[in-house]
Length: 53
Image (cartoon, rainbow, N blue to C red):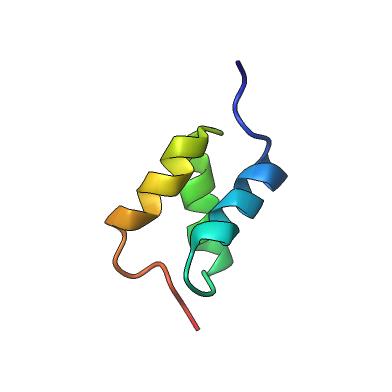
């Protein structure tokens, strides 16, 4: 099974984050997750400064 495409990965990530995220930070998280939906849900939990706004 293949992972999520970039647009779908960003949409999933945006749906679980509590606020706005700097686009560069979002791109780094998406790249690290490699399309893995579970990783997209878990990686942000380890970041304390992902919200910018």
